[in-house]
Length: 320
Image (cartoon, rainbow, N blue to C red):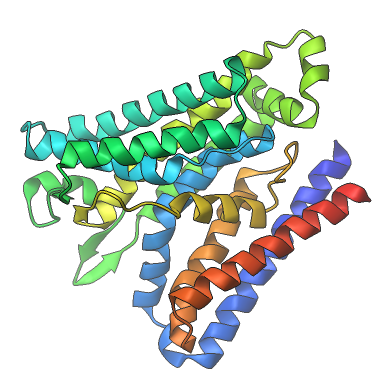
């Protein structure tokens, strides 16, 4: 266990070094990168990805994955907007609904994987498609707008950002840091966390030890769904209009961030702090690369290469 902990700390320190190097490179190559607006943009596009990454860390550590969180985020946000626009529901109820639906989809994923014994990739791919179709049905194929910051009902946006003296204050980062600390404690100091690691390290041995593997396996996916619901709130608070059919690829940003941060793609190893730091790397690339003239296609290529490098590091360390 001591070796595993030192390995994780070393990986997290390496990611911090990568973040510092990226900021330095972008700042040198593009002086316009060094602005407060850029800093806010990086945080804005990291909130919902960070929340998804916190959640998906649990299935990844079990040796599985959840591909439904990206389209799920959009589906839950569309559902919340549908309740507000078409049913006249208060914003508070819509926010709670996002989390409840996300948690239920996570529970379904856990049931399919742990009880029905479906491969996680296929099970969550199916719910990914269900989410996409359900979101389109709820919105009628059109975008759904949540209340803007100028409306009284737009109070929820101040959870992540608000203006003071004409300056945008990205308070959402404080919320994310608190959630990272809480879920780090859950992962490292509770039964759910310990058995999540145990399932990913050796599922059969954990079962033979008398652990209710199915329960804790389902719990990992339910936690993931819960955080996808929270990510839907963060996305709705950042953008005014939610469009059906979007969200494809969001899950890859979250999964890539987690793996870059040291979560093993084969299970058994990972940390919430590492996943969060990995998301910062992904967000920095998204915002920073256009400043040096590299557009969307290059962003995807470089993200893929970074992910391959992170997986290779994981494979080499496991072989040693």
